[in-house]
Length: 279
Image (spheres, rainbow, N blue to C red):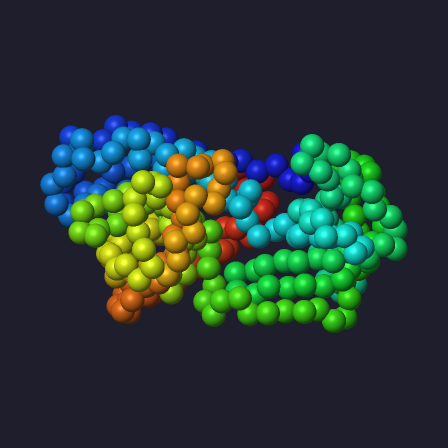
């Protein structure tokens, strides 16, 4: 495999009580879980549905593997797209250092010095597209490409508010409690994962309870949500999980500031590759 090594976030399981007390916190999957506001017998919380979310949380636990430090490249006029890791930037010379493109079986793709690559990249708010030329190929200690950035770069604002990758347990209330996983988050909305058996429709409204942890404290956030998109089971590795997009409505100043701090802290963590490699 190419690129730096990163350690996955440890996810641990703990047993759940038979009854969930009002706004009780349980430490599960290495995350703080906000339970329902009322007494709910354990048997009503479907073990099978919890299991599929637990597996998703474990697989998505490595933030580095989901971080935005990969470029999508297409050699020449090819329509084939490959993902490469961005390993370095030489800002004053406008050079990028990336891993060499490979097939899914880790076979190197044939490229050469002087060849032009079509590159695409997304940051938390903007989509970029540009043509980069290969300055140099290196094969030790791993196959690398040195790329030269062009003067003209296409960019398009994809979203108004920055969105950070998450792996945060949540509870949806509609009005019965339903476990979910927050996979990305902004102060305007989120992408949620939940069991495929649950039925939701665009414009459906519900309340979402999350409890992000910052500065050694947990902060309760309760927001009103409306479903903006139902994407279905789009991850082939997790066919029992569906994904939805939601928009937040009428955030209080308190909740707005907490969500903003949570997003900014996670964006800083995504960018801190060295700490991830050392821990």
